[in-house]
Image 1 (spheres, rainbow, N blue to C red):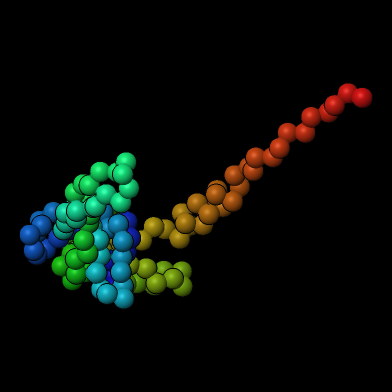
Image 2: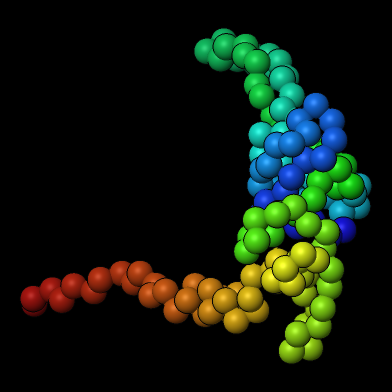
Length: 130
């Protein structure tokens, strides 16, 4: 499946055709994706306790991955996805402008290092006078 979480996509068919949104969940085993603001379903939630109230809850339903196109962050156009090998890594690229659709591997490594370097909070030791 060529669509991943956090991609911006354009919906091609269905009741929400023409809308763009961010992929919230990718379900490769079912070939479906959940897109923010697309295929919004209303579900009734029943009160389970005396202090709760019944309500209508809106939730995002999955749509087929073949009904969406990835929007290139560089050229801003909906495009098909191609693959190329850069530095021994297979990355997704835009068919129209050739820009990478994946975050740079260096940026991912830098983010992991920054998260690892966060100082941990330690308990303050207090010296008690004897």
